[in-house]
Amino acid sequence: MFFHIVLERNMQLHPRHFGRNLREHIISKLMKDVEGTCSGRHGFVVAITSVENIGKGLIRDGTGFVTFPVKYQCVVFRPFKGEILEAVVSMVNKMGFFAEAGPVQIFVSNHLIPDDMEFQSGDMPNYTTSDGSVKIQKDSEVRLKIIGTRVDATEIDKNISQSRPKWDPAGSHPSRFFCIGTIKDDFLGVINDPTTI
Image (cartoon, rainbow, N blue to C red; front, side):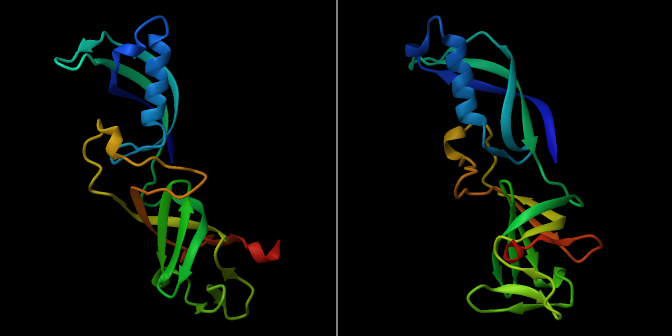
């Protein structure tokens, strides 16, 4: 689910950026450091929508860097238990399948797949109904229900941006939010099969 929230962060800036464009440098660094990161409490920061306030800077002893308290509004994505999501299947094996909904990786166990679907190995592993009418394979779009979430335990200090990986929507991303899902419920399952296109 998406939320529009207000967050605060202390931004450190090198003295070379001081001058007429100080505000632009702070906002640029904020967007670079925060967008695409994950916090266990708030979820994935999708985008910063506005900067409400930039406080007075505090010079750090011995370094010359200045710390500015920044208050900003942003859109975050955080999945919840019981939420229905549409996701794209990324991998299928005999244990179940993995799907991705934006930056969130979801695992659906074979025990949470309807009983009439059987695993088929081969060049393109998949789960198929006995009559062959429905098939779950890589790149299939599925509607599923989240039954459990977990945040990676390394996500403790939200002020250390260098240690946090960024979500890259175009490529691989080290996901910090993991979910367990099910398609064993009404109105859940395949919504688009890539073989029928």
